[in-house]
Structures are given as C-alpha cells and as structure tokens.
Image 1: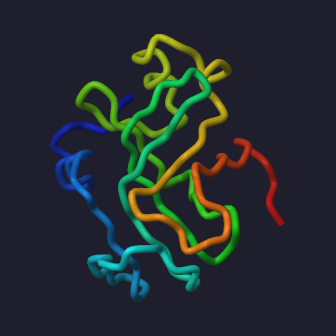
Image 2 (image 1 turned 60 degrees about the horizontal axis):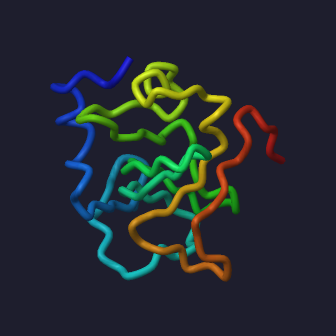
Length: 133
C-alpha cells in the first residue's frame, strides 16, 4: 500500500526537488550543501534514482549510511511512481508498475549527490535478505 498522501507530504519533499539532509546528532538534521557525500560515518537522506532490472527508472528517497560500504539502507528506501510514494519492496509498487519483484529486482541506485568514493554509481542494491557482517 502506498504511503498516504497527507503523511507523505510531511515525510517527503517533492521528488523533483534537489533535497538532502545530514544527521548531525541523534535527533538533529542539517541541510546538506556540499558537492559530494563524504565517507564520514554519518547518515544522509536525499533524493536520487532507482533503476530496476526492467529498465524502469524512478525517483527515490534514499538513506545513505557512510559507516559501511553497503551505503544504502533498504529500510529507508522509497520509490515515487504515478504520484505516490511506495516502499521499494511493496507488492503494490510492482503491481502498479505492471511487473513483478522477480522481474524488477535487483535494482541499482544513484543519489543526486555523488559519493566521495573511488567507485562512482550507479551502485548495486545489496541482495534482499542478504546477511552482512
């Protein structure tokens, strides 16, 4: 089920906006204004894009955690489709897209601000349910 519109208005910026914040404390965020995301052990929330295996490319809200090299927090990843926000793993998203999870996953992702990392995106999603050490 997509995020209800009245809740989404509080939770997300419009998908076309160049939006980014950085967590600077346990409950404090600041507007992110640098050109690249530093690998400084903090979390960043921003827009970007997700490209599914079906070649569909959609705007997304990404949570990037620079404490390890998986970077993308899947629990905080939402996709914008037909005016609604969906969690990336919702069956309703794939039904609305006219495809299945099996056909669409895995995806690659690219934040609006590049990571300050040797490898430049797009980055692969970590396999859903994959254990990390």
